[in-house]
Length: 331
Image 1 (tube, rainbow, N blue to C red):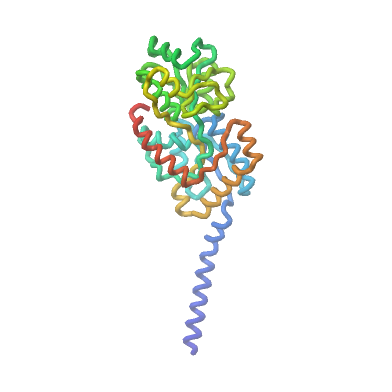
Image 2: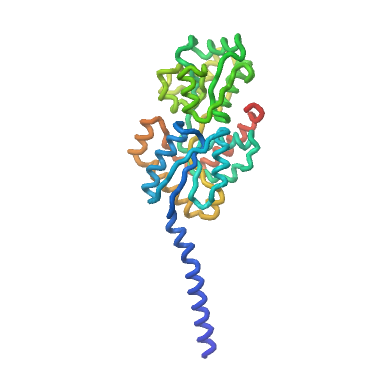
């Protein structure tokens, strides 16, 4: 009987110690976050990804109860920021905010990146913009055909601003191909943020810009819209679709790459190791975007508030990766 009591006591003591040892880990999981979070913005200040990150950070920090700082790590069409992010702790203290499509895929395909899509856990594609082909307002051309005729007659004279590896960059190549031209026909000038690329077009440093239509509303008075890279016309712009223009010329329609997708990604290791933390962050992000007042604030600034969620966002990015492979040697 004494042996049985001793064995029972030992078992209970061992169970208690095991529970006590596991309690701090459980508590840490339940209490997350308990320190500052950093949003790494992989593009320049003032652009659409930058503005999106800072507005979302302000709302999410109130919900999560910890400060969220936003820092810019620009360069290489987002690649510098991606590398910086991947070198940061993978415990939920760092998240990446960028045009998660196509910049991450473009860097993987064109810059020999050490990371892959599987190193990212995509949380949400918040805002997918349609690219606009826009001309500096002072130029004498009133249609895409007129401008491209001028390009054909003076190869290398005209300058087009894009963000490297963006959908605007790819749609520029598609547009040139449709007119029977190569990228040598124009000077493609790259900028590290959409804001800088737009400013260059508005100020006349370049002749055309190919960037997100929503983000370009802020310089509407300084540019002339020529076409949009979508299946349908856009309400905010008096411009035909690219394929409308091509069909009038008797040219085969193209399949433009639709939209730079701004959003947030976590480390894949973070999602795998701390699924509850990832879910809490995801749910908080969704809750913030569901607030009608915040939606209006974003809309007033030309910023979207879509909720696709992790699964759908990941599916879209992986599907479009295959399309981007076609342009690997041209970007």
